[in-house]
Length: 122
Image (cartoon, rainbow, N blue to C red; front, top):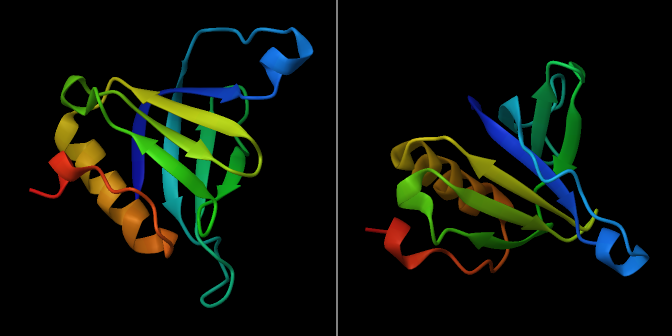
């Protein structure tokens, strides 16, 4: 599953060091799936590729999603909070139907008890 959106990856450890993030998102290609060549046991990854970083950054999804923040999903905004590394992946400038599909796929692949957004289940 590949989708284009505005992405900002915010480290939750920065405030403890007295630092702040950039505060701006960047246009990115977001992919959700397994790495090529691995059919079983490789796990599912969320990959964020930008114009500057074409190789992209991979974040493990299985047993790693702490929470989905979907309060503004109707406006095309949402956040995925990961346990390791301690980052928040902020997504914006999407249609709400695309976000709904992404979160349902994330719930399916996550495999553990994540609080599923109730307004997305309808």
